[in-house]
Amino acid sequence: MGLLGLRLVKRSVNQDDPGTYHLFYGDAVGHPGTELTFFPWPGGAAGVRGAGQAVAVAFAVPAEAMDYWIRRLQARGVRVEGPSPRFDEEVIAFRDPHGLSLELVAGPETARRPWIPWEGGPVPPGYAIRGIHGVAVQEMHVDPTGAFLSGVLGFRLAAETEGRLRFHPGTGGSGALLDLLPQPAGRRGRVAVGTVHHVAWRVPDAAEQARWREEVARRGVAITPVIDRFWFRSVYFREPGGVLFEIATDGPGFTVDEPQEALGERLILPPWLEPERPQIEARLPALHLPQFVP
Image 1 (spheres, one colour):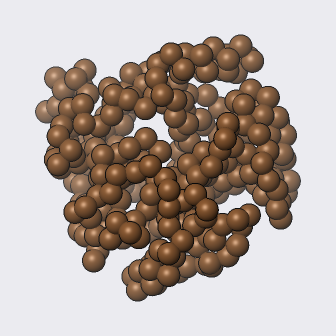
Image 2 (cartoon, one colour; image 1 turned 45 degrees about the horizontal axis):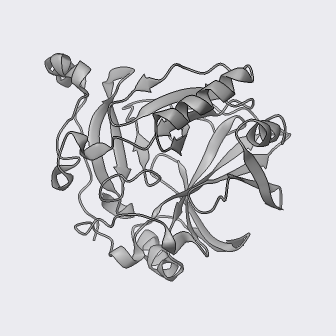
């Protein structure tokens, strides 16, 4: 919704802190791999960008959309850096109003991403964001994070340029990329307003999730039990450098409890929180969502 043209597909609460909203944005149905979510913290302190943290989120767009996005962002007063070459891609970088580092990336695969266009949105489908392209994490050194990615999670080092190491699992490609940025002289980051809380990796089902949970635990890494989030199931752990990772199932999805055409229009709670709705609604701050930006 608003400037980037993502659809609010689920208006809910942080299940670990129901006094805080959890807002899910993505394509028309919140297709796995398209979502960026937020916990609004009114009056919260600003975070610190640094080591042990995901420091940038990249969205995939078609190559022919880059000029459109530069004009659109600049017309709304957003400072844009680029376009700049990176590997076989073109990248523009900017920040959201709270300082979160965002990128729009066009490359050989970005226009072919599986997604469902939001036909009622403010951005024409031909120019629209296709989903998450990848994330960048900052660490003091390449290892132990690099060794953990390749030795435990099955990523491989696919490319390297100007101090940026690109890892991806399996066949990789847009939507499955992690860029590691070693900064030996950097300071430690602090997660708060304007920073990334965690990075989620998707698996198709509970069986695959259980296999990965067992593998991570077998390597001596503390990992949570499976947590039922109703629309998906999650496990969480920290990689050795400190970034919080989630492994989440693809389903059952956001249309399990409301129709596609009504997604995001009202506060939805998982069944176990529904009895507490009056108390939760009384605690939640006023929510002012942006209108469409044409």
